[in-house]
Image (cartoon, rainbow, N blue to C red; front, top):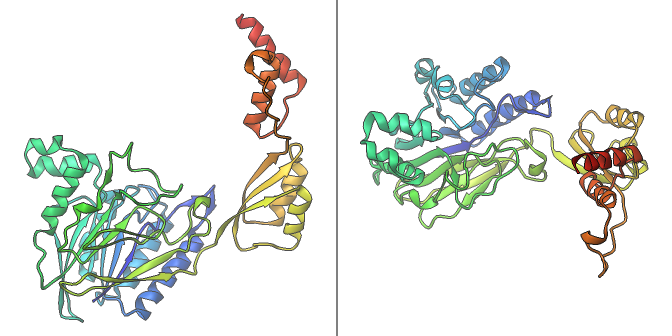
Length: 386
């Protein structure tokens, strides 16, 4: 059977207040076309459908429209789990209607494997679907069905227990898939991911996944990437759009999985064309920056501008820059200053307090010099404390 794996749509997310809704609509259109072209039997969406627990109405409408188009009146099965950005209750609230169209929505972790009959291929699909397992969600689950000692176990032990339980019905005649929203050890992060681990506490090892699975479909990390496992294909599909400038240059994609019972799945990455690129300009001067604007450079991109200057750019310059390119998100001046030559006789001890303050100010601001009034105010405060 053919499975499409995607995740981290983050519908409703903005870029410094700038809407990405139109780009997200383009992604949904492209995704629906890929599903048709690739003859997909099942679509897996591995969490973070929305960017917040209370998404805007137009984002919810886009999600439900996407589900309807992907399922195509039950012709294709769709399975969705919640991520750390989603409200589990909100995500699964439409389940009574969704199930009638072959769509399975799972908000909270449950001790039940998803069993699907894929009529077109005549195969069975079993999915160990584990929505984002926060400590609170795990506690609610285990207090209902497990002994109190389960609550005292380490996070990875709890997740391993859940995975083992959900995978217990796997057998050699079915296609066996694990789907979750987790941070695996060895995964590469981006700035736009809201952290779900603290000091490694919520990081789990790839070893928790059993060899009986053909594929592990993961969400949370926005960079498409494979995670090593000797027996199982494990992959983060990544986000469909670049959501921070740390993702600049990343090719966004979805993953097509060819799976057969008893065999390691084969994967194919399909690069997406929808959405604007996020790029950074580093101009040596305001003059050079204006030249780039005049030539219409990267007109259809979101741009982070860094420009070397001797002084703070004027409001006139800033307004001209923003009017010349609607995609400019940040304008960051980088102040030029000569690097201080190291000398053998330099030490804090032979510097006056006002000199130390000036050097500190320059380093903190990238080279800008404090005016005399600010230095005087600082010295007044020092003498006052003395």
